[in-house]
Length: 354
Image (cartoon, rainbow, N blue to C red; front, side):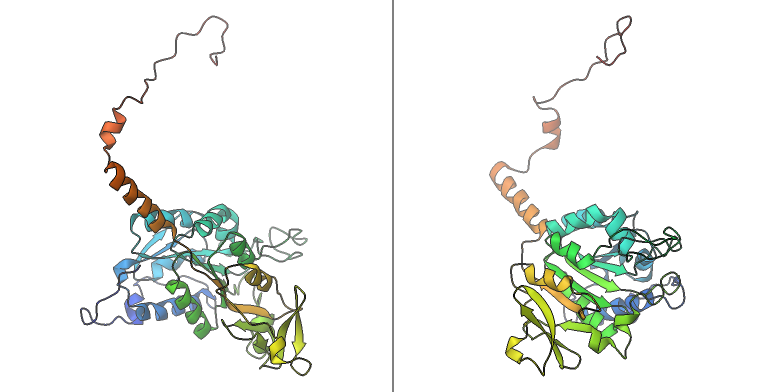
């Protein structure tokens, strides 16, 4: 639940109302500028008072985001933004909370926390900027860097298998998982709007270009002249067509395949179902990568499940109705306590551990 602005009570908010007075300190040409613009464009549409919106970040280039949004914000420590967001959602479940993170902050240092905020279905919106590199620390490989990628910390090429953020989110039981691209502003705003509307943890991976340390990492699938052939735009209830409708995705047994519509009928084409309870379809789509397949963008999965904060609060209310609110001072002074006394003088030859 979010606190919306009652009609007629305040002047309608504009994009400018969400632009802070801080100078934006990203490298010229960074994809973060486009993501920031999309977020500031979306905020007025939500009809949520600024004091009921919070942006929380960890450490990294993306984590400067709270400074540039004229809302409440917390610039926290490396990888721990999900923990602060969980506490805040419990303390005030009426807030609209965003966690802004990157592929390093979110999947390496903060990987454990990311798994559990998704598993618990805490009502927050997680935006993971994926540029396949550590940018703030000047170009080390990240958990999403491709095998063989040469960086300052892998001069001969990485030997690790890279993580797929959508697959990780789905494996953690994410109830909402989506993907968009920094420079595809209209699509990005639509995905963010759907994420905010979702009750529970929403996870949005955003392909973001770091033009200094990993330039054109996504060029093969994001350039205007080829994106129609190399992206599969997911729309619930619609057949999975791409390349101007000339190609589609068909299942051969349990395996997807690309087919020309000259060789297939529309009835053979897989229809996207973002609301199916099982994550199997969404996970299969998350494994589709270029060049064998077009890369899916849009909402992979969006299913209903009780959110963590309200479930916990319901338990507290039930306990209070059955046993009263309780008395902390009485508990501390109750019978179930013990006294710690100083350790007796140790005997000669004793190491003091006994």
